[in-house]
Image (cartoon, rainbow, N blue to C red):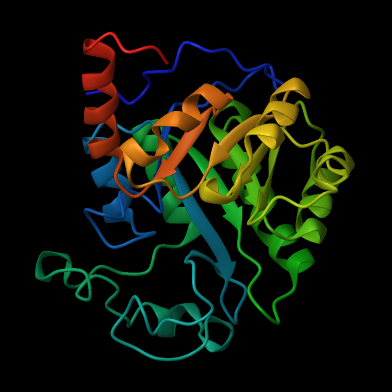
Length: 270
C-alpha cells in the first residue's frame, strides 16, 4: 500500500529536489504505536507511509532525542523535565507501556538511531525543531542540524519550527537548495509572507482548521507547499484539497489512505 496518491491540482515547487507525499504520518504512525518512537516509524512504514513528522529536542547532556513534550510525564513511566535528564537517565524510561502492553520496554529514540532507521527504510522526514519553554533554539539547531544534513539527502528532509530564531539559524547552516525549511503556524499571522521570505521557506505548516481559503490561495500563488497539521478526519478535511494543500500530516495515515482511495475509485473530483 502506498500513500503517494495526490489530488489532481498542481502546486508550484520551490525546491527542485523534493516531492512531498499527500500524507505524512504525524510523530510516526501515532494512532498505532507510541508517538515519536522507532516503533511508530516502523508502523508508519508498514502502513505504506513514505514520510513521517517527528520532533527533536536536547537532553541535559546535549544528546538529541526524538520527543515532543518538555517533560516525560505524558509518554513514559517517569517524571521530570527533558532539560534535567541525561541520556543514561532517559534510557531507564519505558516510553511504550503507556500506549499498550505490546510496546512495553520501548526506549526513547536518539536522533542518531532515528536517522539510521529512516535511511534503512528510505523514508523522508519533516523534522520539527521543538523549542519548548526555556530552551535555547540556537544550541538545539547547532547540535541537531549538522547530524541531520550529514545523514539525509535534501530530497528526503524538511526542517520545520514555530520558532523564527531556530529557522533563521537553520538557514545560516545551509542554502535553500540544500535545506528545505517549513514555517509552522497555529493561526496564520498577517506577516506570514515576511516570515517565510526571511528564511527562504519551502513550505508553510498551518493548523488546518484555522487556515483560511484566501490564505491558502496566496501561499500557492507564492509557490509555497502547504503541509497541514494535524488532520485526522478525512471527510472533514476533504474540501481543503481543492485549496491547493500539498500534504496532510495525520495520526491516521491508513484511514486517510482508505478514504482517498475510495474517493478516487468513485471518480470524485479532487
